[in-house]
Length: 203
Image (cartoon, rainbow, N blue to C red):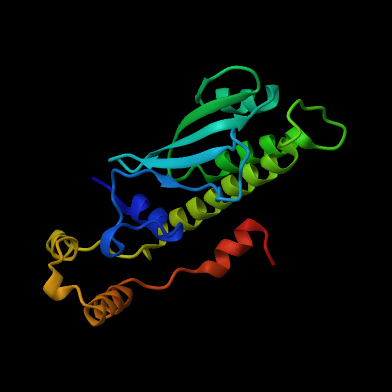
């Protein structure tokens, strides 16, 4: 099982599980939904990484128009739901960052100048949905670059994973947790975030 993409994205999105270890069966949420978002059909986005290192990109309540649906069809994605708000599921590879960017661009174009759309909340929802997809695309590009360069963080050995997952109260003190975190950070090299911001177009 290739868990590198799952571990990498879990780290980037701050969704590691107990003792900072990602749960490979848990989808990774990549949208920016917060408690202040009261609009019910907010576009929720998550990534489910598969055992072979591929992943499924899932959008719930995604804003769509004919152009978005055409892009999804070309990516052989699945679409369900009615009206213009639909659920989308697309099977992708870690090298498909440009495809995710294309989907983001098509969603953002829904509210371009002169366009007509029925849901007034799309004025803020489309840019945020597109921004979340662009961020994912940037992480995928960074992951693929580091994989090709051989600079990805090394996976923890199974024995260490087991030891860190099963923690008894006697070894779960604050000082022990800090020491463990420091040890883990020492084994994992720092990510090149400056390249990520360049990919995103942020100066």
